[in-house]
Length: 168
Image 1 (cartoon, rainbow, N blue to C red):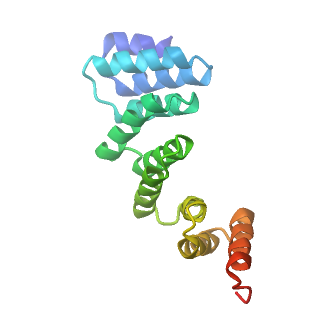
Image 2: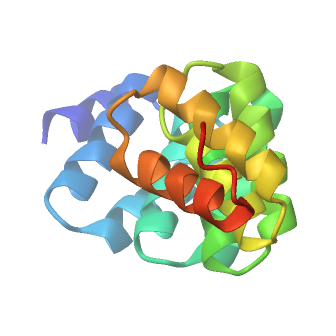
């Protein structure tokens, strides 16, 4: 198509490379999208958004071991850092490494303090690990951002019931 012709004339046109990758991705050809993006990057062209897209494609296919290096590179290059940290946290939750998940959730908060659902996920980890006071604080922080967050409200009420602190 058009963008392939653009790349033939101007191989370093990263917009064309992103567009081709996105077209493959949107039409469900994830293997082709990944192959094209990897080949483009292997030619020595730098386009951090391609790394982000590759990480995301692998994440969506639950190929976490392949996704992690792409997102870590994005964080180091400051490309979509909050989203990359957030996705890394989701990967580490999925693989059971809650300490790493919490580390990346806290990095996400440093980058984007009002990002929805991050406090909730930190609270969930603390709650799961029995750190109820910290979980309570984080559920409350989530409710400051999203007052109607039902799961945060429910879990906060459960903590109050568990600790006998029902007057809050």
